[in-house]
Length: 415
Image (cartoon, rainbow, N blue to C red; front, top):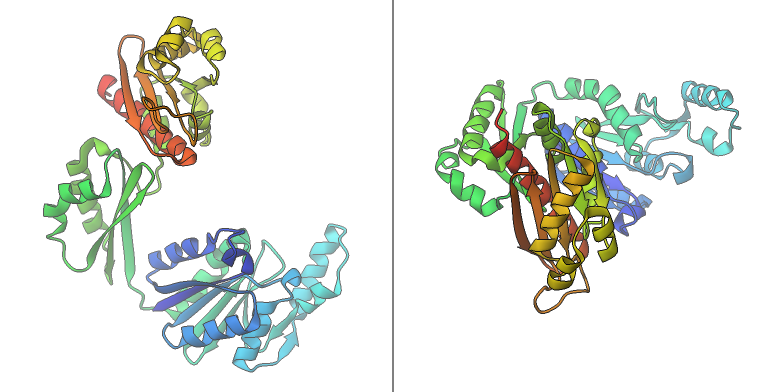
Protein backbone atom coordinates (compact mmCIF):
# COMPACT_ATOMS: atom_id res chain seq x y z
CA UNK A 1 0.00 0.00 0.00
CA UNK A 2 1.19 3.50 -0.92
CA UNK A 3 0.18 6.63 0.96
CA UNK A 4 0.35 10.39 0.59
CA UNK A 5 0.37 12.79 3.54
CA UNK A 6 -1.25 16.20 3.08
CA UNK A 7 -1.03 18.90 5.74
CA UNK A 8 -3.50 21.74 5.36
CA UNK A 9 -2.91 25.24 6.66
CA UNK A 10 -1.69 28.64 5.58
CA UNK A 11 0.27 28.90 8.84
CA UNK A 12 2.54 26.09 7.65
CA UNK A 13 3.12 27.63 4.25
CA UNK A 14 4.10 31.05 5.62
CA UNK A 15 6.35 29.54 8.26
CA UNK A 16 4.35 30.49 11.35
CA UNK A 17 4.20 26.89 12.56
CA UNK A 18 6.34 23.84 11.83
CA UNK A 19 4.70 20.76 10.34
CA UNK A 20 5.51 17.98 12.81
CA UNK A 21 2.45 15.93 11.89
CA UNK A 22 3.90 14.67 8.61
CA UNK A 23 7.09 13.29 10.14
CA UNK A 24 5.14 11.55 12.90
CA UNK A 25 2.58 10.04 10.51
CA UNK A 26 5.32 9.01 8.08
CA UNK A 27 7.17 7.15 10.80
CA UNK A 28 3.97 5.42 11.93
CA UNK A 29 3.01 4.35 8.42
CA UNK A 30 6.49 3.04 7.68
CA UNK A 31 6.53 0.82 10.76
CA UNK A 32 3.08 -0.47 9.75
CA UNK A 33 4.27 -1.50 6.31
CA UNK A 34 2.79 1.40 4.33
CA UNK A 35 5.08 3.15 1.85
CA UNK A 36 4.86 6.95 1.98
CA UNK A 37 5.02 8.14 -1.61
CA UNK A 38 4.69 11.89 -1.09
CA UNK A 39 4.33 14.55 1.62
CA UNK A 40 2.86 17.94 0.72
CA UNK A 41 1.56 21.05 2.48
CA UNK A 42 -1.27 23.00 0.88
CA UNK A 43 -3.25 26.17 1.43
CA UNK A 44 -6.36 26.16 3.56
CA UNK A 45 -8.81 26.46 0.67
CA UNK A 46 -11.32 24.40 -1.23
CA UNK A 47 -9.55 24.21 -4.60
CA UNK A 48 -6.18 23.19 -3.13
CA UNK A 49 -7.76 20.38 -1.10
CA UNK A 50 -9.80 18.98 -3.99
CA UNK A 51 -6.77 19.16 -6.30
CA UNK A 52 -4.66 17.26 -3.77
CA UNK A 53 -7.34 14.57 -3.47
CA UNK A 54 -7.68 14.15 -7.23
CA UNK A 55 -3.95 13.98 -7.88
CA UNK A 56 -3.28 11.81 -4.84
CA UNK A 57 -5.88 9.14 -5.57
CA UNK A 58 -4.44 8.80 -9.07
CA UNK A 59 -1.16 7.48 -7.67
CA UNK A 60 -1.61 6.16 -4.11
CA UNK A 61 -3.97 3.95 -2.14
CA UNK A 62 -4.36 6.12 0.95
CA UNK A 63 -4.43 9.89 1.43
CA UNK A 64 -4.06 11.21 4.96
CA UNK A 65 -5.15 14.80 5.53
CA UNK A 66 -4.51 16.79 8.71
CA UNK A 67 -5.90 20.24 9.42
CA UNK A 68 -8.95 22.28 8.51
CA UNK A 69 -11.37 20.52 10.87
CA UNK A 70 -13.31 22.11 13.71
CA UNK A 71 -15.60 25.09 14.25
CA UNK A 72 -12.90 27.75 14.04
CA UNK A 73 -11.80 26.48 10.61
CA UNK A 74 -15.40 26.29 9.35
CA UNK A 75 -14.69 22.63 8.50
CA UNK A 76 -13.07 23.54 5.16
CA UNK A 77 -11.60 20.06 4.78
CA UNK A 78 -14.90 18.29 5.40
CA UNK A 79 -16.73 20.50 2.90
CA UNK A 80 -14.03 20.04 0.28
CA UNK A 81 -14.10 16.25 0.65
CA UNK A 82 -17.90 16.24 0.31
CA UNK A 83 -17.70 18.31 -2.86
CA UNK A 84 -14.96 16.08 -4.25
CA UNK A 85 -17.01 12.94 -3.55
CA UNK A 86 -20.25 14.64 -4.68
CA UNK A 87 -22.11 13.61 -1.55
CA UNK A 88 -24.66 15.29 0.72
CA UNK A 89 -24.44 15.97 4.46
CA UNK A 90 -26.36 14.38 7.31
CA UNK A 91 -26.62 15.43 10.95
CA UNK A 92 -24.65 13.16 13.31
CA UNK A 93 -26.86 13.09 16.41
CA UNK A 94 -24.50 10.93 18.50
CA UNK A 95 -21.61 13.32 17.96
CA UNK A 96 -23.78 16.32 18.80
CA UNK A 97 -24.98 14.77 22.06
CA UNK A 98 -21.38 14.01 22.99
CA UNK A 99 -20.31 17.59 22.38
CA UNK A 100 -23.27 18.96 24.34
CA UNK A 101 -22.48 16.68 27.28
CA UNK A 102 -18.79 17.56 27.16
CA UNK A 103 -19.37 21.30 27.16
CA UNK A 104 -22.18 21.17 29.73
CA UNK A 105 -19.85 19.53 32.28
CA UNK A 106 -17.45 22.43 31.83
CA UNK A 107 -20.05 25.17 31.85
CA UNK A 108 -19.34 26.18 28.24
CA UNK A 109 -22.29 27.22 26.03
CA UNK A 110 -22.91 25.41 22.75
CA UNK A 111 -22.71 27.62 19.67
CA UNK A 112 -24.14 27.27 16.18
CA UNK A 113 -20.61 26.51 14.98
CA UNK A 114 -20.48 23.42 17.19
CA UNK A 115 -23.80 22.23 15.80
CA UNK A 116 -22.58 22.87 12.26
CA UNK A 117 -19.56 20.72 13.05
CA UNK A 118 -21.87 17.72 13.48
CA UNK A 119 -22.99 17.68 9.82
CA UNK A 120 -21.03 14.91 8.16
CA UNK A 121 -20.60 13.76 4.55
CA UNK A 122 -22.64 10.69 3.67
CA UNK A 123 -20.64 7.49 3.49
CA UNK A 124 -18.15 8.55 6.12
CA UNK A 125 -16.80 6.17 8.75
CA UNK A 126 -16.24 8.29 11.86
CA UNK A 127 -13.20 7.60 14.00
CA UNK A 128 -13.42 8.37 17.70
CA UNK A 129 -11.44 11.32 19.06
CA UNK A 130 -11.27 11.44 22.85
CA UNK A 131 -8.93 14.43 22.76
CA UNK A 132 -11.30 16.85 21.02
CA UNK A 133 -14.68 17.39 19.39
CA UNK A 134 -13.75 16.77 15.73
CA UNK A 135 -13.73 13.04 14.89
CA UNK A 136 -11.49 11.48 12.30
CA UNK A 137 -13.18 10.72 8.99
CA UNK A 138 -12.43 7.70 6.81
CA UNK A 139 -13.81 7.39 3.28
CA UNK A 140 -13.53 4.59 0.74
CA UNK A 141 -13.27 5.67 -2.89
CA UNK A 142 -13.28 2.79 -5.39
CA UNK A 143 -10.96 0.64 -3.29
CA UNK A 144 -8.83 3.56 -2.15
CA UNK A 145 -9.08 5.56 1.07
CA UNK A 146 -9.12 9.10 2.39
CA UNK A 147 -8.40 9.70 6.06
CA UNK A 148 -9.01 13.18 7.46
CA UNK A 149 -7.89 14.15 10.97
CA UNK A 150 -7.60 17.39 12.96
CA UNK A 151 -4.31 19.24 12.69
CA UNK A 152 -3.83 19.53 16.46
CA UNK A 153 -0.98 17.05 17.05
CA UNK A 154 -2.26 15.41 20.23
CA UNK A 155 -5.73 14.91 18.70
CA UNK A 156 -4.31 13.56 15.45
CA UNK A 157 -2.03 11.13 17.27
CA UNK A 158 -4.83 9.82 19.47
CA UNK A 159 -7.09 9.16 16.49
CA UNK A 160 -4.32 7.47 14.53
CA UNK A 161 -3.16 5.22 17.36
CA UNK A 162 -6.52 4.37 18.92
CA UNK A 163 -9.04 4.53 16.07
CA UNK A 164 -7.27 4.26 12.72
CA UNK A 165 -4.71 1.50 13.28
CA UNK A 166 -7.41 -1.14 13.52
CA UNK A 167 -9.02 0.15 10.34
CA UNK A 168 -5.68 0.11 8.55
CA UNK A 169 -5.19 -3.55 9.46
CA UNK A 170 -8.52 -4.30 7.75
CA UNK A 171 -7.87 -2.35 4.56
CA UNK A 172 -4.23 -3.46 4.25
CA UNK A 173 -4.19 -7.05 5.52
CA UNK A 174 -1.22 -8.19 3.43
CA UNK A 175 1.16 -5.46 4.51
CA UNK A 176 4.82 -6.22 4.68
CA UNK A 177 6.79 -5.66 7.85
CA UNK A 178 9.16 -2.70 7.73
CA UNK A 179 11.75 -2.90 10.47
CA UNK A 180 14.42 -0.30 11.06
CA UNK A 181 17.09 0.34 13.66
CA UNK A 182 19.21 3.39 14.21
CA UNK A 183 22.77 3.80 15.46
CA UNK A 184 23.40 7.18 17.11
CA UNK A 185 26.92 8.51 16.56
CA UNK A 186 28.76 11.65 17.65
CA UNK A 187 32.16 13.15 16.88
CA UNK A 188 32.35 11.77 13.35
CA UNK A 189 30.96 12.97 10.04
CA UNK A 190 28.69 11.21 7.58
CA UNK A 191 31.41 10.67 4.98
CA UNK A 192 33.82 9.20 7.52
CA UNK A 193 31.17 6.80 8.78
CA UNK A 194 30.42 5.63 5.25
CA UNK A 195 34.12 5.03 4.62
CA UNK A 196 34.56 3.01 7.81
CA UNK A 197 31.68 0.64 7.07
CA UNK A 198 31.59 0.48 3.27
CA UNK A 199 33.08 -3.03 3.14
CA UNK A 200 30.17 -4.22 5.29
CA UNK A 201 27.30 -2.27 3.71
CA UNK A 202 28.44 -2.99 0.14
CA UNK A 203 27.53 -6.64 0.70
CA UNK A 204 23.97 -5.95 1.82
CA UNK A 205 21.17 -7.42 -0.32
CA UNK A 206 18.80 -5.08 -2.12
CA UNK A 207 16.13 -5.38 0.56
CA UNK A 208 18.35 -3.74 3.21
CA UNK A 209 18.76 0.00 2.84
CA UNK A 210 21.27 2.25 4.61
CA UNK A 211 20.46 5.88 5.43
CA UNK A 212 22.67 8.60 6.90
CA UNK A 213 20.78 11.29 8.81
CA UNK A 214 23.22 14.06 9.82
CA UNK A 215 22.37 16.74 12.37
CA UNK A 216 24.48 19.38 14.06
CA UNK A 217 27.31 17.52 15.78
CA UNK A 218 25.93 14.01 15.38
CA UNK A 219 24.82 11.53 12.73
CA UNK A 220 22.15 8.83 12.79
CA UNK A 221 22.83 5.68 10.78
CA UNK A 222 19.65 3.76 9.98
CA UNK A 223 19.16 0.28 8.56
CA UNK A 224 15.79 -0.68 7.08
CA UNK A 225 14.47 -3.98 5.82
CA UNK A 226 11.06 -4.67 4.30
CA UNK A 227 9.89 -8.26 4.35
CA UNK A 228 6.79 -10.43 4.53
CA UNK A 229 8.58 -12.28 7.32
CA UNK A 230 10.03 -10.86 10.53
CA UNK A 231 13.29 -9.07 9.60
CA UNK A 232 14.20 -8.15 13.20
CA UNK A 233 16.90 -10.76 13.79
CA UNK A 234 18.82 -9.91 10.62
CA UNK A 235 18.76 -6.14 11.17
CA UNK A 236 19.66 -6.46 14.85
CA UNK A 237 22.65 -8.59 13.89
CA UNK A 238 23.85 -6.06 11.30
CA UNK A 239 23.38 -3.18 13.75
CA UNK A 240 25.60 -4.96 16.24
CA UNK A 241 28.28 -5.49 13.58
CA UNK A 242 28.24 -1.84 12.50
CA UNK A 243 28.30 -0.56 16.08
CA UNK A 244 31.34 -2.71 16.84
CA UNK A 245 33.14 -1.26 13.81
CA UNK A 246 32.31 2.33 14.77
CA UNK A 247 33.40 1.85 18.37
CA UNK A 248 33.30 4.82 20.72
CA UNK A 249 31.69 7.02 18.10
CA UNK A 250 28.46 5.20 19.00
CA UNK A 251 26.65 6.65 22.00
CA UNK A 252 23.30 4.90 21.67
CA UNK A 253 20.63 3.32 19.53
CA UNK A 254 17.21 4.22 18.15
CA UNK A 255 15.62 7.04 20.20
CA UNK A 256 18.39 7.54 22.75
CA UNK A 257 19.76 11.08 23.07
CA UNK A 258 23.25 12.12 24.13
CA UNK A 259 21.71 13.56 27.31
CA UNK A 260 20.21 10.18 28.18
CA UNK A 261 23.53 8.54 27.41
CA UNK A 262 25.32 10.82 29.87
CA UNK A 263 22.71 10.12 32.52
CA UNK A 264 23.27 6.39 32.10
CA UNK A 265 27.06 6.61 32.04
CA UNK A 266 27.30 8.84 35.11
CA UNK A 267 24.73 7.03 37.23
CA UNK A 268 26.18 3.58 36.43
CA UNK A 269 29.46 4.80 37.92
CA UNK A 270 27.86 6.82 40.73
CA UNK A 271 29.62 9.99 39.48
CA UNK A 272 28.54 13.62 39.76
CA UNK A 273 28.95 16.53 37.34
CA UNK A 274 29.27 20.32 37.54
CA UNK A 275 29.60 22.80 34.67
CA UNK A 276 30.95 26.32 34.22
CA UNK A 277 29.63 28.17 31.19
CA UNK A 278 30.35 31.50 29.59
CA UNK A 279 29.52 31.83 25.88
CA UNK A 280 26.93 29.02 25.99
CA UNK A 281 24.92 30.99 28.55
CA UNK A 282 23.55 28.00 30.45
CA UNK A 283 22.53 26.01 27.36
CA UNK A 284 24.62 23.01 28.42
CA UNK A 285 22.90 22.97 31.81
CA UNK A 286 19.53 23.28 30.09
CA UNK A 287 20.22 20.32 27.83
CA UNK A 288 21.41 18.15 30.71
CA UNK A 289 18.41 18.94 32.88
CA UNK A 290 15.80 18.63 30.12
CA UNK A 291 15.45 14.91 30.79
CA UNK A 292 14.02 13.23 33.91
CA UNK A 293 16.35 12.03 36.69
CA UNK A 294 19.26 14.28 35.70
CA UNK A 295 19.46 15.33 39.36
CA UNK A 296 20.91 11.89 40.08
CA UNK A 297 24.25 13.07 38.71
CA UNK A 298 24.09 16.76 37.72
CA UNK A 299 24.80 18.88 40.79
CA UNK A 300 24.65 22.29 39.13
CA UNK A 301 26.65 24.95 37.36
CA UNK A 302 27.58 28.60 37.06
CA UNK A 303 27.08 30.94 34.13
CA UNK A 304 30.00 33.35 34.44
CA UNK A 305 29.79 35.81 31.59
CA UNK A 306 31.73 38.80 32.94
CA UNK A 307 35.36 38.91 34.08
CA UNK A 308 34.42 39.86 37.64
CA UNK A 309 31.98 36.92 37.91
CA UNK A 310 34.60 34.48 36.71
CA UNK A 311 36.87 35.85 39.43
CA UNK A 312 34.35 35.95 42.27
CA UNK A 313 32.45 32.73 41.48
CA UNK A 314 35.16 30.45 40.08
CA UNK A 315 38.36 31.93 41.49
CA UNK A 316 39.79 32.71 38.07
CA UNK A 317 42.83 34.93 38.64
CA UNK A 318 42.59 38.51 37.46
CA UNK A 319 46.13 38.22 36.08
CA UNK A 320 45.04 35.27 33.95
CA UNK A 321 42.14 37.20 32.47
CA UNK A 322 44.22 40.30 31.79
CA UNK A 323 47.14 38.43 30.27
CA UNK A 324 45.34 35.73 28.26
CA UNK A 325 41.72 36.91 28.05
CA UNK A 326 38.47 35.14 28.91
CA UNK A 327 38.69 33.03 25.75
CA UNK A 328 41.88 31.13 26.42
CA UNK A 329 43.19 27.78 27.54
CA UNK A 330 44.49 29.27 30.77
CA UNK A 331 41.10 30.73 31.72
CA UNK A 332 39.03 27.60 31.05
CA UNK A 333 41.51 25.53 33.07
CA UNK A 334 40.99 27.78 36.06
CA UNK A 335 37.22 27.82 35.49
CA UNK A 336 37.24 24.02 35.47
CA UNK A 337 39.13 23.72 38.75
CA UNK A 338 36.99 26.49 40.23
CA UNK A 339 33.68 24.75 39.49
CA UNK A 340 34.94 21.44 40.90
CA UNK A 341 36.04 23.17 44.11
CA UNK A 342 32.87 25.22 44.49
CA UNK A 343 30.39 22.41 43.84
CA UNK A 344 32.59 19.46 44.84
CA UNK A 345 31.64 17.27 41.88
CA UNK A 346 33.59 14.27 40.59
CA UNK A 347 33.75 15.56 37.01
CA UNK A 348 33.48 19.05 35.57
CA UNK A 349 33.63 20.97 32.34
CA UNK A 350 34.14 24.66 31.54
CA UNK A 351 33.45 26.60 28.34
CA UNK A 352 34.43 30.08 27.20
CA UNK A 353 34.34 31.46 23.69
CA UNK A 354 33.16 34.04 21.17
CA UNK A 355 29.74 32.92 19.97
CA UNK A 356 29.29 35.94 17.71
CA UNK A 357 28.21 37.51 15.52
CA UNK A 358 30.47 40.26 16.91
CA UNK A 359 33.32 40.37 19.38
CA UNK A 360 35.97 38.60 17.36
CA UNK A 361 39.55 39.74 16.83
CA UNK A 362 42.30 38.78 14.38
CA UNK A 363 43.80 36.40 16.94
CA UNK A 364 40.44 35.16 18.22
CA UNK A 365 37.83 35.33 15.46
CA UNK A 366 34.13 34.67 15.99
CA UNK A 367 33.61 30.97 16.65
CA UNK A 368 36.74 30.53 18.78
CA UNK A 369 35.79 28.26 21.68
CA UNK A 370 37.94 26.88 24.49
CA UNK A 371 36.85 24.16 26.87
CA UNK A 372 38.42 22.20 29.72
CA UNK A 373 37.09 19.02 31.26
CA UNK A 374 38.08 16.23 33.60
CA UNK A 375 38.39 15.66 37.34
CA UNK A 376 40.68 17.08 40.03
CA UNK A 377 43.64 14.94 38.99
CA UNK A 378 43.28 14.78 35.21
CA UNK A 379 42.38 17.73 33.01
CA UNK A 380 42.03 18.04 29.22
CA UNK A 381 41.64 21.16 27.10
CA UNK A 382 40.74 21.82 23.49
CA UNK A 383 40.09 24.75 21.19
CA UNK A 384 37.47 24.41 18.49
CA UNK A 385 37.06 26.89 15.67
CA UNK A 386 33.53 27.34 14.42
CA UNK A 387 31.72 29.77 12.11
CA UNK A 388 29.85 33.05 12.44
CA UNK A 389 26.36 31.83 13.39
CA UNK A 390 25.79 32.45 17.10
CA UNK A 391 23.11 29.81 17.60
CA UNK A 392 24.98 27.14 15.64
CA UNK A 393 28.18 27.89 17.55
CA UNK A 394 26.40 27.50 20.89
CA UNK A 395 24.60 24.31 19.92
CA UNK A 396 27.65 22.67 18.36
CA UNK A 397 29.79 23.60 21.36
CA UNK A 398 27.33 21.99 23.75
CA UNK A 399 27.16 18.81 21.65
CA UNK A 400 30.96 18.67 21.65
CA UNK A 401 31.10 19.25 25.40
CA UNK A 402 28.68 16.42 26.11
CA UNK A 403 30.73 14.08 23.96
CA UNK A 404 33.96 15.08 25.73
CA UNK A 405 32.33 14.21 29.06
CA UNK A 406 31.09 10.88 27.71
CA UNK A 407 34.50 9.85 26.40
CA UNK A 408 36.27 11.03 29.57
CA UNK A 409 34.27 8.87 31.93
CA UNK A 410 34.37 5.85 29.62
CA UNK A 411 38.17 6.10 29.49
CA UNK A 412 38.84 6.99 33.11
CA UNK A 413 36.07 5.18 34.98
CA UNK A 414 35.74 1.73 33.36
CA UNK A 415 32.79 -0.32 34.55
